[in-house]
Amino acid sequence: MKKKSLVIIIIFSLFLSSNIFGQETSLVISPDIPKSMTFCGKPIDLTRFDVRERMDRELLAFSYMHSSTLKMIKKANRYFPILLPILRSYKIPEDFIYLMTIESGMDIKAYSPAGAAGFWQIMKEPARQYGLEVNKNIDERYNIEKSTIAACKYLKDSYKLFKDWALVALAYNRGKNGIMRDLKTQKVKEAADLYLNTETSRYLFRILACKYLFENPKRLGFVLRAQDLYPQISYREVKWKSTIHNLATWAELHNTSYRLLKLANPWLLDDFMLDKSHKEYYLKIFQKSSLHYDPLKTEPFDKNWVIDKNTKS
Image 1 (cartoon, rainbow, N blue to C red):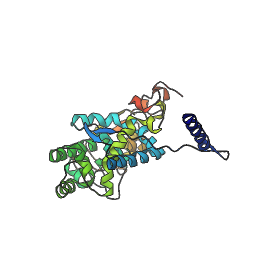
Image 2 (image 1 turned 45 degrees about the horizontal axis):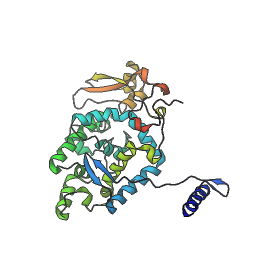
Image 3 (image 1 turned 180 degrees about the vertical axis):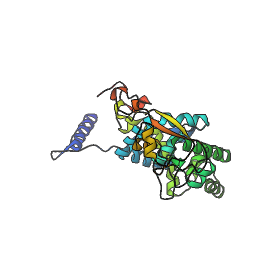
Image 4 (image 1 turned 90 degrees about the vertical axis):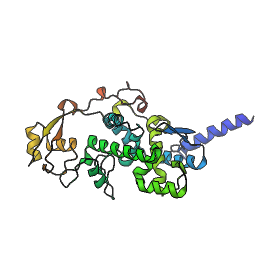
């Protein structure tokens, strides 16, 4: 009898939530929190109350920022195939792809009030230290491949110091010296045990929540079809070693447009390119064959992101 009454109550509650006074409403559900996860192969205990609640906060944020979360998944289909091979080549754990994702949302022109720029939100001086050209005319923090290589070098150097990838992630946000000082003064060894400012305290769990989202989008309510994802765009490269006085004219001579040239090369900040460094540059030009969207040819990089990779509109 009690079981039957409970079923009636649940059904009635669902009815009320979907039709109150004749108005349709949607259910707002808290996402399930996994009991455990790994970051770079190391287990994260999500049963400890404070760790669990930090994870819950970030899962709620991703679950209910619908437009930005959907856009991240769409963009990942275009950019993950470019970035992951670079991480692998530098022996950086693939989980750091999610660090990049929370840093910029995969907005290549992302720029913070503090002056960090690009996918990996790199500051000017570290960028130059790790081989990127940064000036008023060229900013290679907006070069997807070169900035990823610079980030990999920074992360490898950081790992030599900490010997722990979770601490490396925190140091990316707070700085190496800050995390070293915190470990010493607080007399702890694990990232989850550090008492930090709000931003850095949330940082590792934002990465973990982002990882969980990309591995289980449907569990968080994000349902996409293959054709919803942004396809990769192929390009050819033109090697150039001199100043380009007018990029619009240069684009026309190379059978593209100024707009498409700038989209393919966001590191070009002006309508000309100065060869201050006297080095070779590689300018991308989109292949015309890949410029036009074809839903029948859009393939998911990860089958977990879509309902069915063969579903077509």
